[in-house]
Length: 413
Ligand code: HGY
Ligand code: MN
Ligand code: MN
Image (cartoon, rainbow, N blue to C red; front, side, top):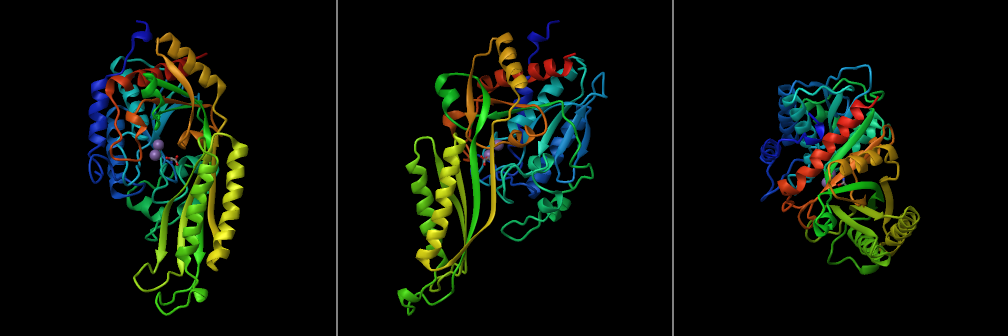
């Protein structure tokens, strides 16, 4: 039978997605399942159970990345992998990342149903801490896998409550012993919701991702002095919150200066003591700067660096960048992108080629294995919002494209 007529079981995929949507419920219709939370642990356990029921063997590495393996006929060859992440923002949707992991599982289930054995083994991967909601930076698990972060550095990261990454990984039972490095992948394909309105607006079921916006992250701390908010004369104040406020406004202005392609904002602030009547002597803000063009993104980052220094001076407080990171992607594999184009043509699936504006695990995996991404539509591009929504009929073409591209790659001579 021509595998071109091979299609995944959309109802089974949806049941699986809906089950995931019950683990770590958010305030309304979404999810609150940050990395290494109890809910993340529960979701991982559920995923592992599903994988074992599908006959897969499990491998967990030292930062908790999960590799679910299906043997092929020639297991000396490195596996072709699919995957994404199961952790969410704390006001997250039910599909960001999750679709990519569970679509990979559905591909496996479909091949099992049809007794199809691939030449190369297959793997479905769940990367740890893609969102960076609890532990910054984002894409930490994939970053450690790609050698961007050392194991000890990752394990020592702490969340706002001082909880240590390594301890939380132990607590949920996913401190694996499989080595981080040296696990070769023949290729990695990540299906992900677009997190933008383009595909829906153009009525297209698939995006083939040719690259990703360049993004810079900065964690900035301001150190002032506590004092009474009443008697203290203005020229004696060293209010850390004021320093943060100057920076927050400047970062926003830089985004508008390079509008419409720029994205630049501050997403969080922490303060101490953060109480009435007393000036805060400590503030920490996280800055997120993005642009499709690397040179412009770097220019924006330089202007943010100048704004950081200026904010400290204007508020008469000390300021330091305590953590910084960057991601972006111009190293997706041309072979894998061509394979997606060809397979979409074979399956008569219309598609657009596009950049990703959000970061993904695939950005880091692309540094160590041939990698490509597939986008599927999401309603009005809404994401990192509990209203995130996708439709089965609009999503299945991308899942079938994933399956056929993986089959082709896994069976090539
Ligand atoms: O930062 C990002 O774009 C991704 O959602 N972690
Ligand atoms: Mn994601
Ligand atoms: Mn996300």
